[in-house]
Length: 115
Image (cartoon, rainbow, N blue to C red; front, side):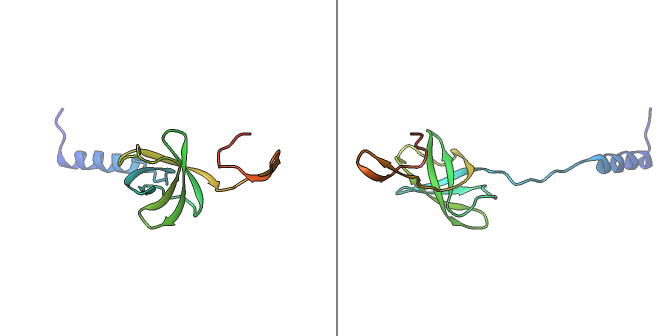
């Protein structure tokens, strides 16, 4: 079966018309730099100021510097093993510090504390 240029053109036009491109913002990013407990992340389009960012190893960072193509965040905890290329995720939660009365009086608890 031989196709002529008109048929080929029509097939291409049909395929283009059927092609569905979906663009959506992701809440996953990649660490592009680590320096003194501050990480720069690329790809967190929906990140909010003060949002907790989930890091590998059940750790968190706080988003403090929102730019068009990157987010600057401060790591809460050890950061020596964080490296460029690691994946991170937005949590959708703004940093909260619960306060309660324990045996020693009022105290603050670190984010992520479950007791």
